[in-house]
Length: 348
Image (cartoon, rainbow, N blue to C red; front, side):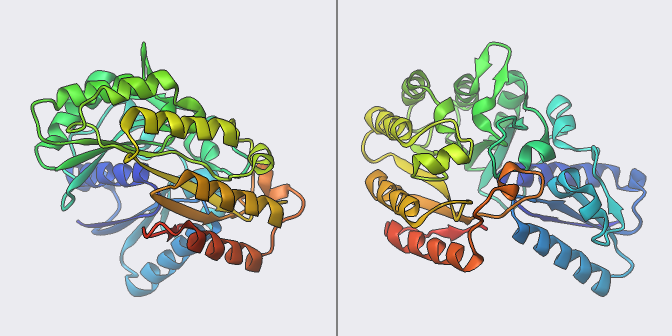
């Protein structure tokens, strides 16, 4: 059987795709999909992602009519009717054999993540935070976490073939297994790798879920084992917008967290972030507050998103939706204003 996979979205999705690939290699004869299969592991964070997925399905059906196109991932789970109308031969809105929840409870055999220097190690899935703009809780479900022993063992396997390991999840800071939180998991992974020369990097974190005690513990891990880089999601530098987004912190708390990180790790610690522009009701004055806050924080890199209304989220029905042209203008302004010399990506 010929097998291909296309992955959209986050690092957790990329990890899932490696698991899908390994599963298909081992179970191709029993998969029942035919002689040629193309799996699309989807994202649905933005409308742009949905359009790209629909376009890929149409292209595959046009150019490879004998290929079985399988659509799985977040899109069919969040929007099953929309996914079903896209024309894939198989749409999996429930649990694929290697769905995140299944993989977390019963991990698949080690997947070598071929052709990558950096390997992803997924330790957590799901989110119950219900940010006003986000459909992911519907697509991924409630938080689940992998056992410490399993993730430490997988880290050792990954270290044999990769030069760096990135710890990832849907909301990493919600990791909880027995008495262990996220920092306990990071410590266990680093301990499992202490005889290796493979450093660990932590994926995206929520600022209100990272305590000063957590930061102190992380700072005690040698820099040869833990990268001095933290991605702390911001989303807006305006307190009123953060409140409408149902984010659980304000700019004062965020500022304090950045100060704690720089105090513990030194001024050269790399701090990156995400920001959404054009959230419903965002005024020019509120956007100006975000620009000022960005300048104050001095981020190493910013991922800028243009707000994308997702059906089923609170933000989709909010009043005062921002015009696409204005969202584009604010995206451009923030990207230019960041002025760090680093690449600023438009992920939306």
